[in-house]
Image 1: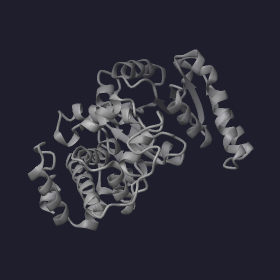
Image 2: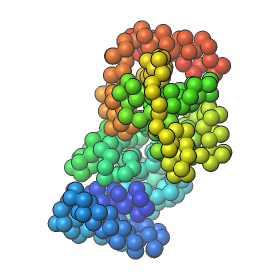
Image 3: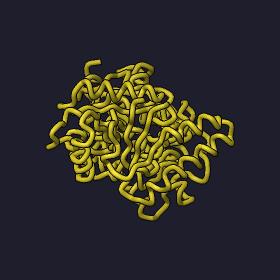
Length: 369
């Protein structure tokens, strides 16, 4: 039986352990914190029991999943794993140090980071076998979310990418190749969905109008409903992180309404008050189509800029955005629906009026389309 190692048993790590154990792999997992290690199996048993009670899982499947998980005390006991995935603190020094420790202990394993914001190349830098290091970016909750972004750096071996893809697809996930660029695919290409909505809010439009407009054209949740669901603080941190990583390009500008929302503590569902929550968006405004076009044009442009940087495809971006952000259509499907001239015209009009010069400059493929 192929062995998967998981390092870090918080919410994400335990979800990873559940995923691979439920798929029939032998999972060996550990955490530096003894209390977290000791509580891991009881926490998983409780989560599985809820699924059994609701009829979503059989008792036999629950028992098999638990039987496939072994919680260990140290890294050495993770051998003989074929794939090791870290889900520890989001700090470059911590992840680099962990992989340096794992290299000699798991000589045959692919070493995967679940980072959502750090460079995979930077994590691999200085290791004796950087070719074994990849990114496997899962989305929370791990058992439910279908998408996994597979990230190789320039020195990653094709064999490491193939092994990680095969094992993760065998666990039921849709694996999309993503470039080792800030935000990978989803976290980067999602920024305009929030950012352009915040720009309109800053200009005086209501959050309710904006969300209602997006719902009217087929989106399950408006941008402010999503911010309320995720947490305004989490959204701001992701925006600021990408803003810094992309050298403060105006496409990632953190708008004042989001900063203000965090400052006053109205973070969304977790605090009981957000941009929209606890209310629902109202009736779509008469100019709903124009609001939606503005947001969709910026989604298309961001995806086109990412595509121009290499390492992914139009189909990959569309699939990732639909699975990772639950969009009804991907950016390049939006482009096909509207047509390039309409998208170009909208972006040109926005660039002509914005104080953030360069925010709406066309990606090369849109200029040529």
